[in-house]
Length: 61
Image 1 (cartoon, helix red, strand yellow):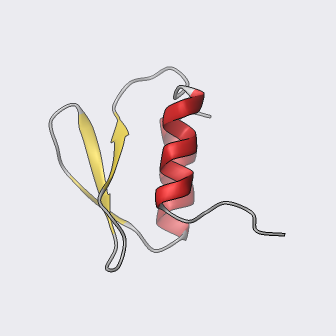
Image 2 (cartoon, helix red, strand yellow):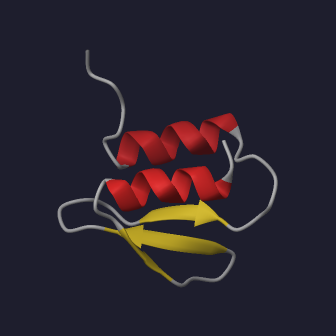
């Protein structure tokens, strides 16, 4: 999954982006800050899983 695709998911879930150094920081009240790396290639699977878990975007069915 690319950075752009992850950002679309976070934005749809109500997170807003704040600047950072090597990462963009996505925030939403009641959730920990979620760093998303700024690079053009796909986000590594472990990082992606962490983002999904912290944003509570995982499918619970």
